[in-house]
Length: 66
Image 1 (cartoon, rainbow, N blue to C red):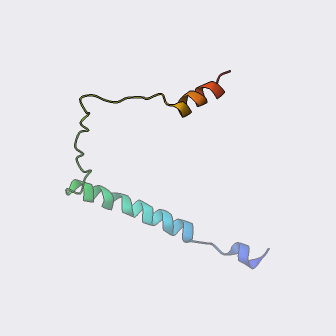
Image 2: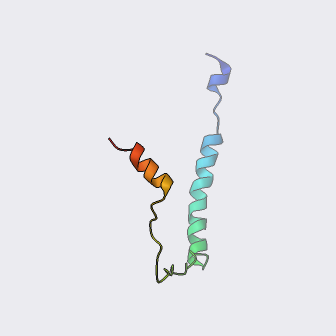
Image 3: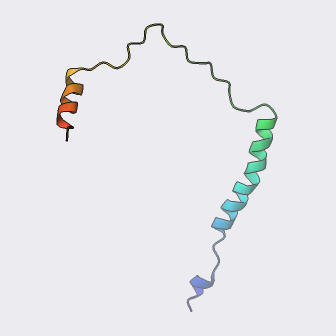
């Protein structure tokens, strides 16, 4: 056997340990007030323009027909 294949690479284990240790820290930060920001509701305009069928849209419809 090759000596390099016997050597253990701990980088993966270190990464998983750091990720596992980071989860409780993130949960504590959320619990202490660093939670999700409250978004303002989207206000729709009174008259929504909606979908407009333009020339390029009609061209797409014509080429997409089966």
